Image (tube, rainbow, N blue to C red; front, side, top):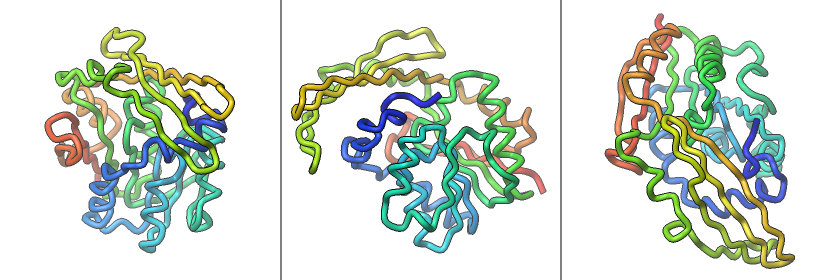
Length: 242
């Protein structure tokens, strides 16, 4: 199931405007170059920002996401015809042989159900060619990122062309580790509509993630730091053996 901020058309349409700094994706572009990837599977592609960074580089990209509204936004963007878009979770994937599979941003943590997480790792493994890699990030639980998720630190007012002014903020609803549930609120000044979107993230320990990857047949090649959040996240590089 997709969160409302991705699946509700009015929220999906403004997602990029509210999250306009995607410098976090630079590291993933560099890794695609580092691994000489010509075919990439972007799991949880959302509105297609990362997929559309890769496609102009001559990379064949498949973007999959369960949120139909986000896929609709992705398909409406310039250059979208270069990407193969699939609405669904990893179970909806056709047979593939890609060089690189990615889960950027919160995607890995948003797959909070353990069985769904194991299934996603397995489906990604099946989509990779021998020697291909899965790359994703997850926050270090020890850094307790959720303590900064409150209205005081997150409140902002954004003017969006064609939409008007939108107020937004986040508040934590429940912390029951390893799960953290929080709610984004959006207020549209044009008509006063208030929309909310609840999300739950699973904060996995490094050793837990490594064990899950090994159990699905991967070789954990590297665990890197996230350049945009140094010391706060793990970036896993896992390889399907030759």
